[in-house]
Image (cartoon, rainbow, N blue to C red):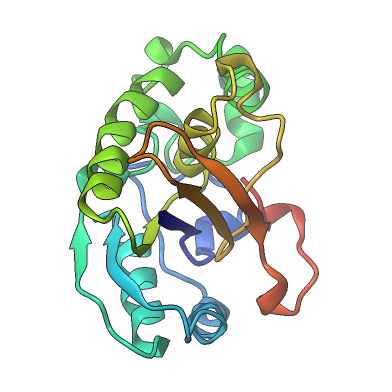
Length: 218
């Protein structure tokens, strides 16, 4: 049995400002985020992870390294470009409210209608594009570690799409489970080398000891 611990990176300045980051944008992690990464690492301190995989984007790779420092054992960290956030083109760096005015259809569909989201106007990736690049990476990880715990650090929108796709959720319904918070953990397991997955925990932030606000969620 493989158990996958999917972690969204720590909260950044652009998260706080409600700006799109995407794969091409990035902003500094908030000072409080380092404390929250430490809390996550301490929460899973007794879990033996065989490996950590992370997006190479700075906010994710720093999150992975920080968490690893608090684990009882410090597994190797590998960076995979397939774990990057959505490429959001012209939306990257812009505030949500400004995108809603400039690209109202793309804004609405990206948030609420994954099957209708067409990124051509903004020069980005579709939901299917992201799922098609992430799934081979997850499948390879599960096949390489058939009886281990694996930590995967990535991004809110990409993880939301991929995790729900792994669970067999239809494209139109990918967003219906709700968003993933910064420094949250979602756990899946597979008993058949990645042919199917079971959800054990969704968007757990209990170890952060705080009430979430809208800027925490994607």
